[in-house]
Each structure stands twice: as structure tokens, then as C-alpha cells.
Image (cartoon, rainbow, N blue to C red; front, side, top):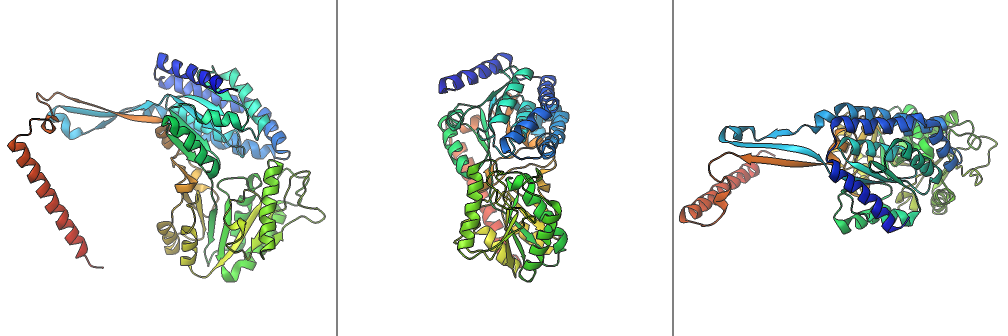
Length: 488
């Protein structure tokens, strides 16, 4: 797959878009329907491919997270796209004067999507559906790490789509680099912050707008008066989804200092109940490859060598970690320090750091001293402490008492902030991301509305400008004075 070959494939889509123009609502729904049919008609083939790529991954988990899990969001988008397509009337008060204005959502053109390996179907199909809803054509670069899934998805796409509508690219990291340099009308990437920087740099060559869905170290705060046993089970289950290889997984947990041991005991008990077996069970997903397996183990070893307390929760009789299956025992890590890599690097495995705290301010300061995470989790009541945590921290989203609740509803935008990403999608947010909102404004006034800004600059214009500056400055000074005199 050469740069010229990729450019030719993009040109085919660009020419089709220019020739046919923005598609109707019916055409957009039809493309979404074919995408849904492609996923659900071939769910077995896709889940088999994902299981083969991982070595051990539950087919049920793959169906639930990769196919069923995005069905409701796609259906919500399909149902509402015609309403979202309608122009929005603007400046209603000016219509009586003869000025008419509206804002039209228009397709950008061709959207490029670069998918990750941790959810190789979900995280390309969902943005593709929303790009279709906005009237675009789509090119997808599948992850080379999950090569069997990529090949299966690409082969299926040719049965359901003309490549001028949806084109799926497979290939190694060099192909991905060339793909990122193409002059798309929008580029959507899901992956690590490290690769996200490279994607943004490549896209900047053609000033391509980008949406980056990245990761980060997501903190969990358990309220001092919370039910530790219940919440330890929920947090542990969340950490073990996809073997911990989820950008939204909890990465470290703050628990009241005098309840850390209680949390670890409750979490261990919950894990043993969830996973009576690890090595021979698909319920704990394998590390996707040897490199990720070794990387997670290295984080744990580094923490151990620097004095951390390592608590492996291995089923009786099983020898873990197991390099043959790339399985790592669910592990709790306590007594950590800032010199340990596990406190600064995203874990992306079945390992959870547990830390004690005495005051909420300690937690807030710790979070704020680090890059903004994709999610912050609070387990406890919606009380003053929770609202303080929300108000004084920054993250892509916040969920209370459950995992990833803030990204589970299509009515709510999902995205990161700072190092955890930029831009958002899901439902209307996705439609807006892949649309250009173009203002169309006209005047029937018998003179130029904006002509006052042009020459000649007469005495009356100069006087009017001075009066405007004086009036606005006076108003601003009054407001500042009122602010400074307000009760503290």
C-alpha cells in the first residue's frame, strides 16, 4: 500500500462526493443501515477474528462491547439525523429589517478514521456511522495489531459498500503514517496520547481538522462514608473489562486511609468470585500481544523493586503470569511512590493501584498536578464533596457509582480534554463534529449593511467611532467597579 495508492483511493471518494453532492437523509440512513447489517450479519465472523487476534477473548464480551454496545447509539443517530440536518434560523429580530440568516449543517467531504486495537470494530464503526449521518464518505485504517479483525472487516466492507462510500485500508504502521498524511476533510483517531501527537502533526501538513480520542490515568475516589465492599466489587469489575485494556478503565483508586486494607480485601474477594479461573477462562481477556504483556509486567516489577506492596489475586493452583496465554493475574498495588513508573504511565492491563487519603484536597491536588484524564470516577453520594471534586478538577467526563456511565448514552457528548483528547462524538455531538456549520445570510435592505466600515471615513464616522469607544469603555469600568465592591 503506497502513498500514491492511498491518494488514489482518497481521490476516488473526493470525486464521488463532488459529483453527487451532499446525500439525502434517505441515502444517509441507507448507508447506516448497511453498516449495521454488515456488523450484525457477520457478528460470528468478527468475534472469531477478534478471539484469534487476542488468543483469549470472550466472544460474548466481543459481541456486547463491539457490536451490541454501539447499536443503540447508531440507532439514535439514524432516528434523529433528518432533524439535525435542518438549517437553524438565526437573527430572528433582523428579519423585519430585511436580513435573513440561517446556519446549514453541511458535510465536510471525506472523513478518515484511524482505529485502535483494543476495540477494533466498535471504535471505527461508531464514528463511521456518525460521519455517514453528517453526509460524508469514509476511509478507515484498521489497526495492524489486530490483523485478523482488520482483514475480516475489510473483506466484509466490499460486500456492503462501494469503495467510493466506505473504503477500509489494512497495512502496517508505515501505511498508518501515510494514511494520517492524506488531505482528508476531517481525521478521527482513537489511541494513545503518544501516537495522537504524531497523528496531529501529520494532519497539520494539510490543515486537516482532527478529533483525538486518547487515554490517560483515570482516577477513582471512594467517599469516606461509602459502602467499600460494594464499590470495591464494581471498581474491580471495571478494571478487568477487556483485560484492563480500555481507555476508560479506572487506573488508580483513592480510599480513606484507614480503609485501604478493607478495600483490598473486598476487591480480592470480588475478583475471586468473578474469576474462579484465569488461565483457561476467556472471561479475563489476554494481553493483545507479547509487547503489551511484557510492558504491564515491567510496570509491576518496577513498583515492587521500589517498595510497593504487590497483591496478586491468582486462583488457587494457577501459575501466573502465564506467557503462553499472555494472562496476568488481577493485581492490586499499594504503597506506591512518585518514582514508580506505574504512577505516571497508563497501565492498560488487569492491575489497579490503591492509595489512601485523609482529606479531599489531597486528592484534588494530586489529580490536578497530572495530565487531565479521560474520566474521573466517584463512588459515593452526590454531596458537597462530590460537587467540589467536579468543580475543581478537569477531565473528559465524570461518572458516579458506575463505570463509564458518562459515555453510555448517545444524548451525551463523549470526548477528552488536554492530554486525553480533543473534540467529541456520540449522537448529535458526532453529527456536529463531522459537519461544517455554514452560515447563509442575505439582505434585502436598500443600502449596504456593512458599508459603514468602508471608505470614505468622514467626520461623522470618526465621531461615531469615538462615541462608541467612550461608551463601551465607560460601561466596562462600571461593571468592574461593581464587581470589586461586591460582598465577599
